[in-house]
Length: 234
Length: 234
DNA sequence: GTTCAATTGTGTATTTTTAACACATTATAG
DNA sequence: CTATAATGTGTTAAAAATACACAATTGAAC
Image 1 (tube, helix red, strand yellow):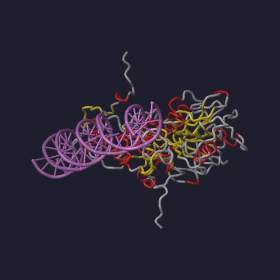
Image 2 (cartoon, each protein chain N blue to C red):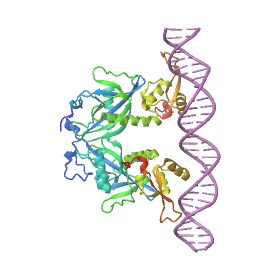
Image 3 (tube, protein in one colour):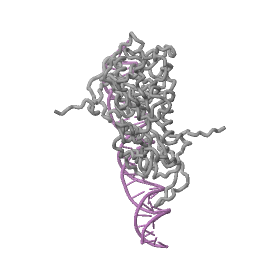
Image 4 (cartoon, rainbow over the protein chains, first blue to last red):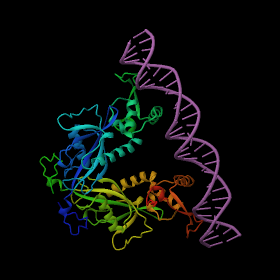
């Protein structure tokens, strides 16, 4: 590797020293199940944090982008390709990793648990309720909190929660999801009104099945409104 | 350095390969002067971007935190210690730096140009108006845009702009600053009303000096309201 | 098939927030 | 003393957010 001549302040340190920092990405993978917001975690196997929950992450390869590394992890761990991903913050305290200097770029991603059942059997992957996760390895609790906070800000005015739901969902599910994320109760009438106003939903003229009470109507996300999958008019 | 045993997917790559990534921080240092939002830049001296403007940055040393590295740069370049700093985003495209794989953590910081005149003479430092900076070295234009966007979001509900102003300022200056950052015109009466409502300002009962028109009252930021420098009651 | 339990679906009034808007006042410059 | 250029101030209208209650529909239990 050539010398990095932009950095004229190397002083007494040689280039070699600067390459003693390793870089990882960690993904806070959110899911929604049983009316609870959950996060995908794995049992940590390094001795300092044996048995603690840890986020899914890996070192960034020298030839891959940060996004690429994150998508690779998501693919490896969940089998999912087309998931929502957003970079949140980079954590770099000198001693955050017992094995040496590792700086990690934290992302959150939103996946739909129900439509894509994971094979959680043979490894130690686990969907854990976000609100009662006690201890975690490394600084992963802080990373989780930061990502959760970012998610809360995000959902307030961006249509991203749909990534957490099946294609068809009821307003009840949608509201329950918001309540789980924001950790507050919402007024049902105002909630519904707001969503219809915003025109984020498409009424599918179908009803829920197999609920032990009056079934609600099903909706899908109004993707057309947000420029995804735009129709080409020739 | 010990092996990083958490990462079990090294596969055919050895640890050594993972340490071939260098890490830098870049600071988008905002200032406010002549009713314009400005950014501190420096002439780039590497051949690929000769003469282009570049942000202030440096490699992160193996033994310093990300914040520490940013504060070091700020101190070295501006002489300022106690400045507002906020991490924004990490940029890591594989080919973003001609000299090799360098990932950079972008921060913005807010400094008060007037109270702390910099020594801009002997080096190629320069306060450049944010709105008419054409080309920049590396991906620094993108970094600047991202940081500016973040600043815009931030000022909407957090009292940070005061870091860009002298201790004493008029409402006119404050409004002009908001207009520069947001790039819109604001209604003067509503602007004033809003700030008094929010109780962010302390009336100093002083008037501007040396203005060629009716002088405005001077205010300072209401720090007490935001828990900084809390008074210890015994 | 009647009743119960649970949940859906719906509208209005109130409060709060935001936006639009004009004129008298005060200082300096000439 | 007049012109200029800015400061300082309040009201009204529109929009957004909040609070709130009852009838309708389904499945389950009897």
